[in-house]
Image (tube, rainbow, N blue to C red; front, side, top):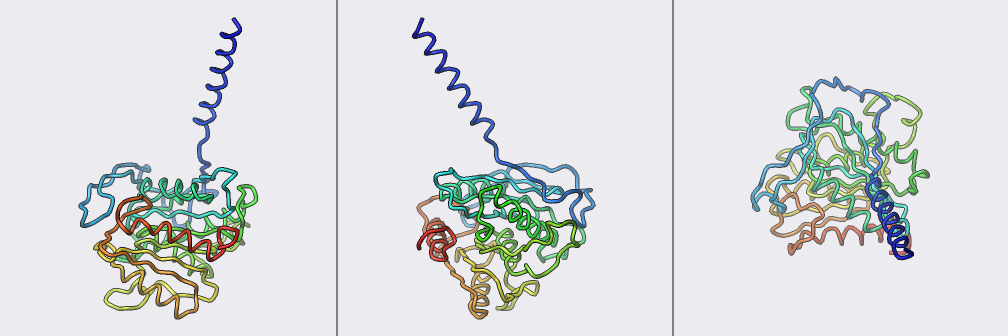
Length: 310
């Protein structure tokens, strides 16, 4: 009888733990109190599908992964690290997708897990895609930067609640998301939407930015920054990584940005990997480009953005 009671108690405890794990979902927060700025909301319901299968010449990760599209209601999804590892640093994650889709799995959820492993709060930004009819063809869509600025303000406003150091809120982005992260880091003094509430009084300047195989940084046919970008005083430190065999986003985008940052006296670090294509994300592999994550963590420690000594 005693053994049966002990077994029953064990089953109850086990069931409780499993239930807790099942309910331990990331927090999802709307960016805007109502409809987002300049949003008609007529693009249809949000959708999820698998990405097309690419060849090794085009990308590092060739198998399909989950993408989102038709986003008209932007959100942030917060993944907290284990309490005993928490550094107080947070990163907004900007998945890529050419401003048409969001590579949610490869460049969102997997990135949040990587950051959590290193004690960093990972916050996936679900910004508006696809491009709207009034966006200029061949240039970055304009609404995602509104979403990025609002997201930084929102995270900073709730930093204490979420255990985040308000002076260590950065951004990491991939492909078009890399452009978005860097655009936010260099456009913090630029108003992209009319103030909605007191949240918009808070600074939208990230404390650092990381761009991985970014696009839209270089002007077409010129070795200079894209006309929509500039390097203002106060631009935060920026880390750049790219593959030299990237046929989707030429590595010159990151090289030109790095040179512009150095000329402006902004702390910057650039890594270009031989024979590396697009879309490696943070997945470990036997390719040298997968080590960008290790270099990035060393850079964060060197810049004292993870707490403690470098």
